[in-house]
Image (cartoon, rainbow over all chains, first blue to last red):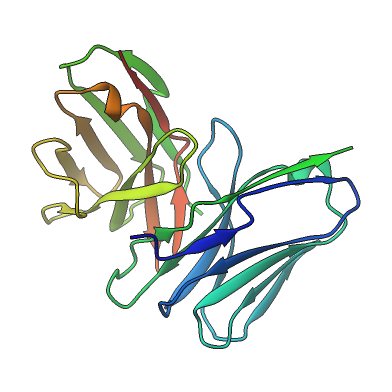
Amino acid sequence: TQLLEQSPQFLSIQEGENLTVYCNSSSVFSSLQWYRQEPGEGPVLLVTVVTGGEVKKLKRLTFQFGDARKDSSLHITAAQPGDTGLYLCAGTTSNSGYALNFGKGTSLLVTP
Amino acid sequence: SAVISQKPSRDICQRGTSLTIQCQVDSQVTMMFWYRQQPGQSLTLIATANQGSEATYESGFVIDKFPISRPNLTFSTLTVSNMSPEDSSIYLCSVGGGYEQYFGPGTRLTVT
């Protein structure tokens, strides 16, 4: 059972455009993480959010955790080719302890 | 964050054989996790391996197929036994510090 639904699955944009990736669930999460994975490498942690309504910024990336802790979004401003990669959301629930449930990922391609 | 290495980085194995994957961490950690990432897919948790206790397997994964060792706080192995082409995947270990997890580079396994 996929607890986390990510959308869109694929996204191809030009450099300078803005984009938003969504991560939704019917379950409540204790925490939610966003990772970026490049080919041949393991996922790299971008951010962790734990409080409903929390907003975190990492340079041009803005992460938001929904008030009910069931959804999250990642917004990238003025995308650059270096942002290309697979973006994964993952969360922990009260049942999973610290084990992560992953969404299916959003594959982002930013072209110059 | 911890620095995690995996060996081998990739391997091509014949059907019916077994492969042991090593995961080494540069610091002592209590929680380690093993994930599988099938081609073009997201990550699926195989098991949680905490030092001093038996590994806990997720639904669909069994100890006879994926035996895990965790002899100390910096090392773990995952064996993929009696392999079939369906086992062709990337296998990743991760370590946890609270809600955050950090991943190794992965082992790309191809079974022929």
